[in-house]
Image 1 (cartoon, rainbow, N blue to C red):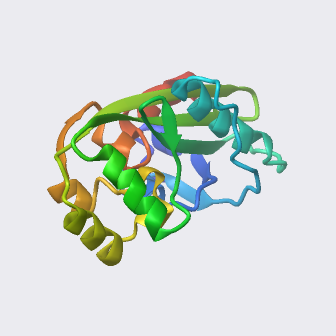
Image 2 (cartoon, rainbow, N blue to C red; image 1 turned 180 degrees about the vertical axis):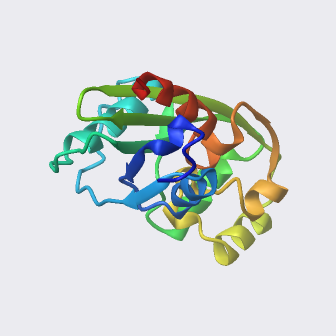
Length: 197
């Protein structure tokens, strides 16, 4: 086990995510972590509000994990979306789409929603966290510099708050920074109280 003085750390977390940022957050918090694979599509009803979309995607991923959970294991699934102008910005499929997304975000405030599912053998908690992010106005040259020198292709909205765009392009954040990075760890830690007997 990890540190037995903290009951939250007595769980083994099965994290169904390919995100290196989520893996880093769990490892640095001290969890006994195992990465698991889940094959689930990420389609959703665009008529839903962004909180519902994020929660749906997290729950949908969890429903595709078919292995039995042990008493000390928690399956954690999550999905982060960027929401602006009544539309969801997913991961870009190419550099041109990344440029279009960052141009849309430039000089405006958008919202980042992360839906999270925590599942034990007994029950499941589903919640979301939202954060407002404001970008300064970006020049085309700055956007292309980021696309060519960073890794926007695996990130919702085509940016990472923890890399160059966060350093240079983000002017303010209202809410949880780590939610924008990909996982609301402070809220997750609080939600674990529901699983502590």
